[in-house]
Image (cartoon, rainbow over the protein chains, first blue to last red):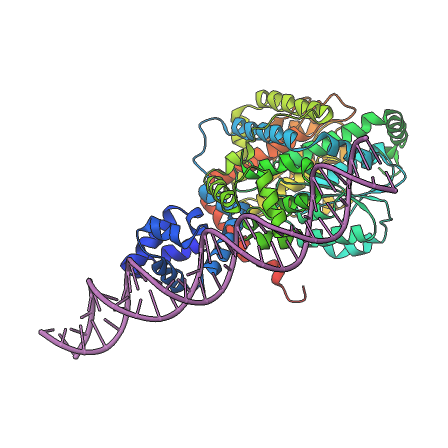
Length: 281
Length: 281
DNA sequence: TCCAATATGTAATAAAAATTACAGGATTGA
DNA sequence: TCAATCCTGTAATTTTTATTACATATTGGA
């Protein structure tokens, strides 16, 4: 149970001075609880030992102990879609689609500011290197974008692969990754530990990682050669992935234009494969 | 400017050890910045004086001063999640990304005009009907959007399925479609004949089709109950699918808000399933 | 190659914060 | 009414944290 709920539950059983502390804490959650004992006591109109008795009654060994848990709560709340559902305001008067698109436009604007050109160009350089293979993978919701990007990139350059199947087969598929290969990973909060682990293994195999993530940066950022942070908030109970897809499309477009001759040849070769005229169809 | 944006902006100009501190701070925002100098220094692999130099370079008089502002940032962020996305810094010159995003914004604007509110609401009604199942499928490039939408919708309502595997198994999977079920199909040019055929078979089984397509309308439009045309032009050799994904997200959001109580209950139930704590992991 | 400027970590010191000791007041039950 | 228990704030003490001094390493320019 998060501290805020714990305090709300305990309110009725607290002695007078401790109840004052509880009210001050809830009214100024979470910042006052992350400040000093003296500040909370002062705001509540009580004393430092009263604050210490208050946190002891909640089951904490010390005030630093209490603050450690509170920091964890806050971290989780900034990440949890559920919490945002609780705190989201009323539905706007505008038609739903208009509001949604406005939010997307805002995210695109913010993402444009967040992605340095040097990083974007470095990403294009990685993707334009035909000598090495490109491997794609994403998380629970973003893997569909990885698949989408791989499907498009496969048309304009060779050696494009998408990790597929269960996470248990990722290890097998690692065998096909060679030193110098490029791994394009999509990971937004909540970051997947199996994906983070795979990133570590990819670096061990000397693959170069291009990470497309959110502004809080997946742990994979530590090992990535290039990191593209995309703004994902959408005033919703979950994160929008539009900006990741937009960045993916921009990369595809940029790489396609940079080597239009080779891309055209490959597309022509693809059209020359008359698939639907196979016997039995 | 919030501290996080301030740090992101300053990243490029920081000396090596301070850059480590910045990365550690951003990667563990906000909790590590609310802890001690020693904890942040340890996580970054640097020293306490380096952390002090880092906050001084950002313009703070002391570490408590830095923490005071950070607490205020966190308080504001918990109150207004939407505000987080709205950055105020100047737009860097990133021509390729800027052009790509401008094209997307233009497509979004055009799509907003192309989709009647009555059709959008009708689509939401279809998706909100919990008595019947929802089946998802897309074409060569759009199936990843179908998968994405199914993955999200599955969180807020029951009986969501995504046709998977080879096209040869679609016929088998048709057996699970009941009269009254909703089929959400994504099809943009070039329209796939096997997907068009499946649409016909779905209607034969009395399924209700929601089609998300381009302005020229896939042949499936003939059999669809609701058609949402999305502008896909991107001045490229292939079509952008951003607007289809944007419409998908708008539908998810709308359905989620319309039944926020049931959606919250389902999300809570999902969080109660502690997956990663299974034995053997 | 050398020197000056900058960056960095260790150790010591200063300051701040947390905790404890203690005394007085309030409340409750016999 | 009285005694026991609980609650509370002040002040002192202890502990923790922040800051500074200093020496060494690194980097860049002449």
